[in-house]
Length: 309
Image 1 (cartoon, rainbow, N blue to C red):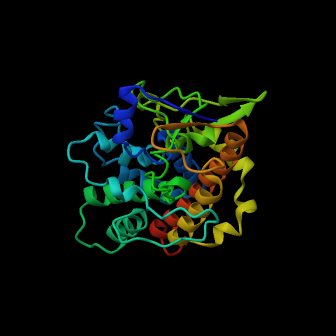
Image 2 (cartoon, helix red, strand yellow; image 1 turned 120 degrees about the vertical axis):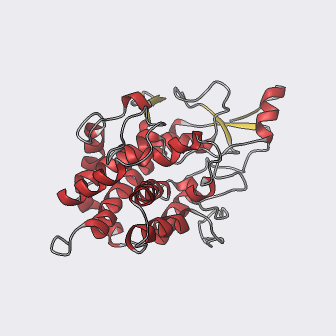
Image 3 (cartoon, one colour; image 1 turned 135 degrees about the horizontal axis):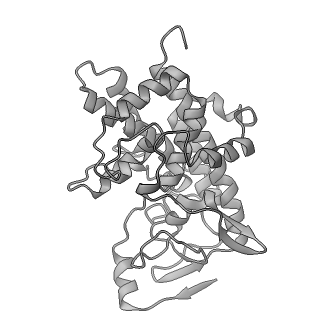
C-alpha cells in the first residue's frame, strides 16, 4: 500500500538521501563471530593482535577485537573527511530477472576487497597500522558484499531512495525517514509473529559491544549457524571469488530485494508487508551465515602458516 506524504521536512529529506551502512553493526558482528568460530586458533590470534592497533575513539575508546573490527569502517564515518563511502557497495542496475549483472568501474566494494587483501599480503612496506586498517576494511567489506542492496541499484542508491512504512525501527533517529536499505541492513533480526512484523532482538550500541569474541553476540551467531550450517551451504561455499558473491547478492536484490510492483515515485511511501519481511529475514540470515563462513575461509588462507593450511 502506498501513501503520499507532503510535509515540507519530508520533501527536503527526499531530495538529499544518504547511503545507509550495509548490515548494521550487530549484523557485522554476527558475520565476524561466525568467522571467528570457523577460523583456526592461530588465525584468530593474528587477527586479534592486528585489529587491536586500530584507532578506537569511535568504539567507546575500547580496543577492537576480532568480532568488533567489522564495525570499524562504519564507526569511522563520524571522522572528518571520511573518504571511503564508495567502497562499501557496487551499483549494478536493477533488472527484474537479475540478468543485468555488469560491474562498473571502481572504486566499489569488489575493488576495495582486492585493495585491502593486497595491502595485507603483497605490500612489504605497509606499517602495522596500515595493515590493521586494511584488515578491518577486508572484514567489513566481505560483510557488505553479501547484503543484497549493496549490489543492486534501482536508480535509488541501493534502496536508500525507496521510502517505507510498516517496520518498527527502534534504532534510527526520529529525523531519519525509513527506507528499504535501512530495513535490509537489519532484516536478519526482523520477523513475523501472529501476523505482525516484530523485532526479534535489538541492535547493540557501542557500549554494549562484546569485549571478547566469546561474549554477548555468540549465542545469536550460534543460532544462525544452527539454522544455516556450513555443510548445508557447501555448494555455495565452493566459490572464494568476491565477484561471485556480488553476483549472488545482485540476483537476490533484483528478484527479492524490492517489494512487488513498480518503483514508487519520489514522494511515495510503500508499506512493507509481513510476507515480504518473512522472506527477507530468511534471505538475510543466510547471507550473514555465508559471509561469516567465507570470511573465515579467506582469513585462514591469508594468515594460517603453510603447515596449517
